[in-house]
Length: 232
Ligand SMILES: O=C(O)[C@@H](CO)OP(=O)(O)O
Image (cartoon, rainbow, N blue to C red):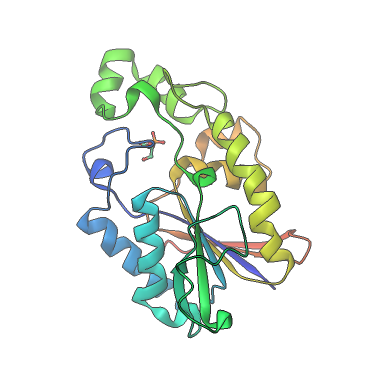
């Protein structure tokens, strides 16, 4: 049965500093790279045919580490970035290998970018809670439909991530291929909300750890059969 592996990127430099990040393109910390390496080892027994990431470097770094640190995951294929994510058959200047069957395509797409955090981007989360109150900041961070000032709600993020997930990414699952997605706390919360059929009240409690793969087994109609969180 096809597998769908979702991984939030490893710890970033701003996760370590407890700062709102959103669309700011912050790289992984040393610990984040170690988390991605551990994720790669945990996925040793799994095989990936195609990978999707956001356009943000921390998700790309995590994808590359996952696919190359323990390269059994690629089943002998070479991971290659495909820079036109809207064209599933795109072969531009990346196409140096004559045998397409030896490529493991990685599609970066803005549909999987983190929620845009608006005016909060760059601010320290604890200081922001002291200024605006813990409950208000928690509403901005975790509620389904409340927007942080100038930013996106989870619902807004879901409007771009879930249609792309359904029309583009699930197509691979329906063809029997295994997919790795490397993305962000909130773009993945939106996709998990869809996969696990969570209500807007339930999603408030959903927290995703950095660098921990979640493996779904689906059937060819994309119905979820099993789910395992590789947090041990
Ligand atoms: O800062 C961010 O972009 C996100 C994820 O790190 O934070 P939060 O935990 O508030 O969703």
